[in-house]
Length: 114
Length: 112
Image (cartoon, each protein chain N blue to C red):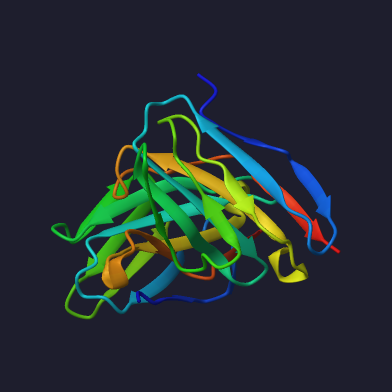
């Protein structure tokens, strides 16, 4: 089945600096890669996604890049703010083994230092 | 428009008991899924459905059953609860698997 590795598990940055979270996936047939943000005690919420026919997507301070050859994708947050503190999960659409759903990474706890 | 709702919010069970976690959505989404979230493990897919009358197994289906008799509802049944099923359970829905998935508020389950 699909395997998604996410690094780092914890990331601490100064307010105003940039943060980068990286994920790799195993199934070359995967074609959809969303990123979810989860605040403490809350439900995950989609912040950005990218499909395999696109190399980069940007939404204000958030961007995602995809390298299909290397099978990795990254989340970039610029000008970080205190409200960016949360756990971020990458995911890939699972297509192998007959199941059709998302496989999630184990998450990155992003801490914004004031 | 309530989005995705889940009941109960919190439940304590004894080993061997059964129960049903309820999930409903009012967005006319075809795709619905159940995930469990354990510390340090991310979210893992239990079961999913691509439409009424159609269900299939995800990554960790053992010990759980689902049904999808209507587009709106997708209950998850624990057949005989075990301590290993202590977790937070999230239901999600979307038009298709590769579209924005909207999560419910979660059910926190403790099995003693």
